[in-house]
Image: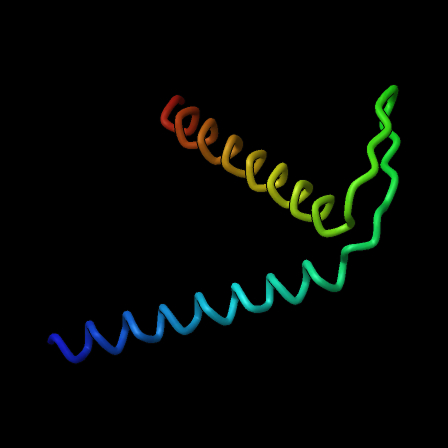
Length: 76
């Protein structure tokens, strides 16, 4: 049992390291500054930061829909 748990945690650690490496490569390749205009706001930020912000907003919206969806599904 311990060998299986050790192998599983080693694989998990390796996968995390690969994902972190890909994240670093992505950030390095997307350092160009872009300008974002939204209503009255103007932002200049690196493209990678913009992508991560959009991803975070999407994750938050997904979490909200799942959170409120599970509480409302019990009603009939």
